[in-house]
Length: 340
Image (cartoon, rainbow, N blue to C red; front, side):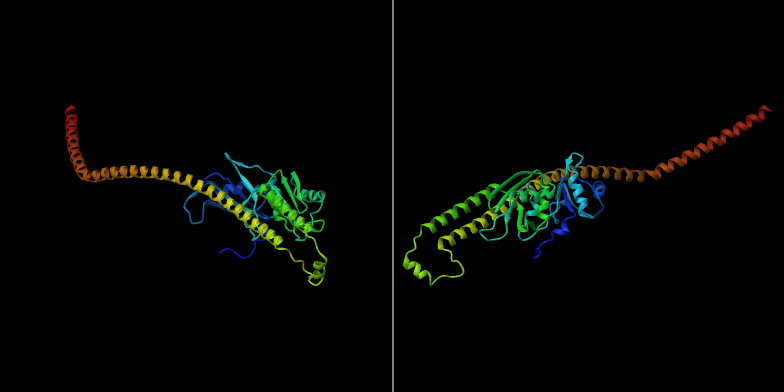
């Protein structure tokens, strides 16, 4: 069961995730490679597609926890990294929250800035203030566009400034609370803003075309409420906008999950084929070794049977050689005596 509490960003400032590692790399090799950037407190290598799965990843990944966040900044500034033929994919770890449950799994270069207040007259600070604030992330801004008074689209040259913005919440620009989130679908955002503009234009036109008669004005004096009441059309428009937002978010999350599962399934299929080949090679080698083992066992058994017979023949030949040697020695001694 998932935790009901949001993860805290401060707990992730000193953590990175390193992907696309070579197959078979050891914890010691990863430690030696990254400890030059600071003291490593913990390190976790993920080699399987899931905890209970026996399928190994072609390119495992690792979570590294450094002593402080300065080590992470040094690592991100030193990219790219290569181990063998593999280019490592390094990024900061992000917390998972109810508001942004999938943010930690998305890597983009674009962000959206929007006003947190629900007041219609609330607008974002001026472009220069936003630009100066974002330069604090040490990232180069590639594209900047104000989509409307409440939304700004920004694209960096790299994905790391985006993660820094996510870890730096809340954001205050000119003492105004501003929300910053990752933008994974720019076209969807533009369509949503365009729809809102059209809906507001229609509502404004309908209100301006309504004529108030003296009788209506008189009755209205008795029905004025301190809380503004929306018309049915405005309520329908708001419901449609909310429904559209929910549908768009669900569709985007669905696409992200499908893409993630497709990638994992492709890796799983490749690993399955590789393991099947290894299993076939193992069976063939096992059969060959078993056959060779039976052959040596037979030879050993035969040698045990032949050992007593060979020993007996050797003893008889030794005795015969001893007798021959003794006879030759006696003849030699006798010959020496006759010569003297």
